[in-house]
Amino acid sequence: MTDYRKIDKELLERVSDNARLKLSDEEIEKFTKQLEDIIDAFKSLDEVDTKNVKPSFHPQEISDVYREDKAEKFDWNSLANTKHKEGKHFKGPKIV
Amino acid sequence: MTDYKKILDKARLTQKKFSPFITLPEKLQSNSKKGKLSGIAISVKDNICTKGMETTAGSKILSGYIPPFSATCVEKVIVAGGFILGKTAMDEFGFGTFSVNCAYGIPKNPLDTSRSCGGSSGGASCITAVADFPHVALAESTGGSISCPASFTGTVGLTPTYGRVSRWGLIDYANSLDKIGCIGKTVHDVALLLSIISGHDSFDSTSLNLPSEDFTKYGKSIKGMKIGVPKEYFEGVDEKITKVVWQAIKKLESLGASYQEVSLPHTKYALPSYYIIAVSEASTNLARYSGMRYGLHQELKGNFDEYFSSVRSNGFGEEAKRRIILGTFARMAGYRDAYYLKALKVRTKVIEDFKMAFKNFDVLAAPTMPVVAPRFDEIKRLSPIETYMMDVLTVAPNLAGIPMISVPAGKVNGLPVGLHLMGDHLQEKKILQVADVSS
Image 1 (cartoon, chains in turn purple, yellow):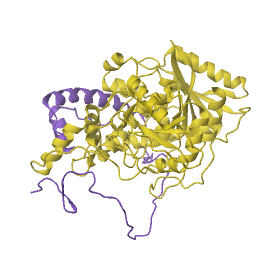
Image 2 (cartoon, helix red, strand yellow):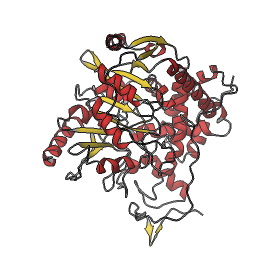
Image 3 (cartoon, helix red, strand yellow):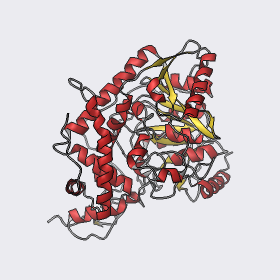
Image 4 (cartoon, one colour):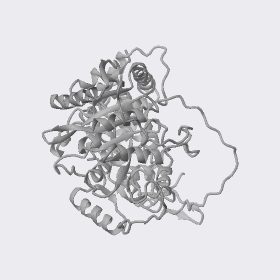
């Protein structure tokens, strides 16, 4: 059996931080309880013997597809949907 | 001649009554090309990109996004003479079973407006049920988002084999599960649209390299066909629904098919496996929404962590946040093996169940949903895990990427019940054939 860690406020804050989501106190409280219920229900997977079973990343076996590495011209205006731009560049928030 | 103005007026009236659309254009773009879809209006689920027409995937975080290109399936529709009617309502990014997790309007079931159209392609099923002009919907399923709404609205929903239709231009939910498909009034309608949109596309490396097919040329007689009835698919299903579905199976028997019960032992594990895989993939896909290149923008304030977190927290709805958190958790160091990898291995077992069954049967028949379309007040009372459980009958075939079709089988208390027919990979014609005679 897998040793599952209990979902608590601290873990949820760590996860939401990783996911770049700022949750309100109410959201944290609500999600902690809901995620606990969900994870509890998902533990049934332990009942399935998956020793020597390969994971299926896709429904059917899919092989890599390669193409020649040559430049193609796109006529899209990549900046058409942004409000944050300067010249030919996207403008982002401060990194440092 | 197609009366575009009249069709748009009708769509607007439908919008007022039932809200199937997120976007309706000011004027319909006429199409003079002669083809199999000439004169047919095609509604497009809002997670499929349409050049020049706002595409939001039902999320506030993509509000205002005007794609500079169209999805391959949309391009193919235009080449075949079809015209785009509008963008249909959906649960945000496809995250839902009832089309209530919507940043814009919630589509209402035309048969009873206090009830759901099903999700996540709820708008697609809604307009399909109401349209009295030639129309077929481009929809999409990750875990049942075509079958469920078809079942709840008494329409026909076809989910093709994974890879049959190019996903280029589809706003990803879960790449290994997403499939573009069709919702129509008849089996012929969905077969026709699939014939147009299927085929290999070099822009989608998971699209299958197969010659195009005319799916409307399915067989007419089901004499001698073997139908498997998976017993696990009747557990917990409303008794009246079970009765309607068995009547449909008996009808198929009277038309010359034979049926036999079969067991798919990993069925009950498909739900957790599906959700873990789906949210894991979703949480990585949704990482790209950061308020920089498209969609929701805010004033550039704070460092990148603060800015991204602020935009994302304002732009995503509650269910999207829940799934991002769940998916991030399932992939985190220390949990990945217990959840994500385990779920992928269980998926293998689910696929093996189906492969075994299809050695003996041409199609599998089951109810599409365990309930008829629920009322909105009933949906409100469900907890997230109770809502997820509603997908119990549709997630397994979606995990396996096999083709499936939901066709109306009858009614319970005046509400439609769907018969779900599932086939082996690439056996669309078989399920279309059985679906056609069943209805």
